[in-house]
Length: 550
Image (cartoon, rainbow, N blue to C red; front, top):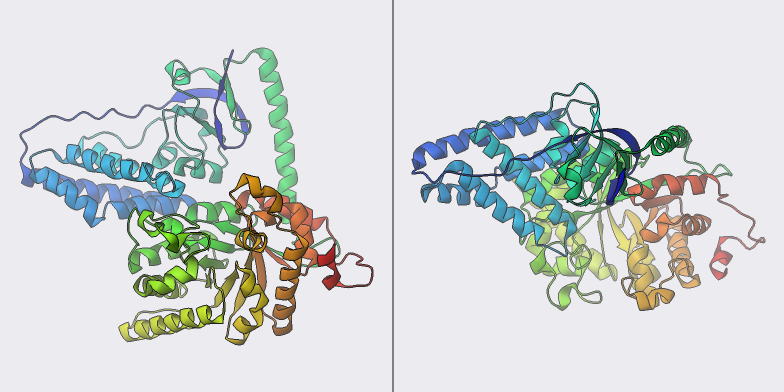
């Protein structure tokens, strides 16, 4: 019996037999090759690969669907495929060219150390290029004809690996390398498959066919467990099944406080991958979609690519509303060249300030959003708005985009809602101005609002004492927003890390908030807290306005 430590990627506890998955080590002959023949083989292989990916997307949930559609889209990327064709014309085989260029693109993304989301996409590129290479070399793309469920073990898993096994045959996954935020891990979480990563290569040496207890919640596994360990694991599995049944009962309960006040739970998301997870956890929509996380390295996506991304998010939300925050480079830190210099610093030209300085880029995003809003309940909010001049300037560009789409004859939603993300105290103090100028909704962003209110960088540990998202000052600002919004019947949502803390959420509830947007993993925790809280506690007869003095 030996214990291996790793990192949790998808929580859960299972006991089962290991099946080792080995990816091919690519080797290529040196030719000579006929470029015309290799180009024809490449075109046919890409066409076959895209058909296979599209087929996977059709039978997948929205989480996996978006990943497979992205892979298919990458095989249409002119920049990458032109490089592949250039290599073929230089005399190497189609498979070697695909491997060489795909690896370079994947390495470029993997080296974006300040952008975890783009690092995830590096594996998608490797997955898509490997599929083309396997077609070119006549290798099978479906592996393992299993007659019983197993725990998969591999150096690392590709997203399509989890779809290359018959449904219901994966008990869990263990990888020697990889990230807990990889797309394979996201899919595993969406499919409720326990998994751990980074257990090291020693585990893989002789694990095939042996029994393992996989405790993915705590990030470890036991190879060849003894009778006592097996018995303890089986008892724990039974207990987890009972707890899971209790959580499903929580799902079915109406979103109402203890004294019968309805509330709304939304999710903070970065793309279709975690939107589907949020929906499964009971979210009634997306309160914050961080649009910057779709960026490819070094460039802004064009209008059609952005439109595709937003439509994928709407599909993942399954008819529920999606609120998109326009680009906030310097917060999302997604495109390397958009984050350089003072324009993206915490007190510089972030958010709408940066967008207004780059009107062409901003118009591209707004046109894509307006078009996507014709496909589902999508609304748009501007981050880092300081005053009504920012709002008016942004809405002037929105009207320009509407007119442009009318002239182009492109369908879009004329009545798309636009709102302000309240990240700066100045905006909270003048919120009536935004409402008077046609703002449809407000979102209080506690992350930035707290640090700007208290002059405390939320990433600076030495200033942590001053970073207080439920301080009297914060409560006073929130109360001012609620009073102004309530007088004009403008809806308000609150989002940020602080809202995921049930103690803070209860205080925001008492300030009059009824719409909360939190990370998907905190949804049920926050729901449980709100179910056990009165919306209208006894405030000593002073009313809500007295609460910020607490």
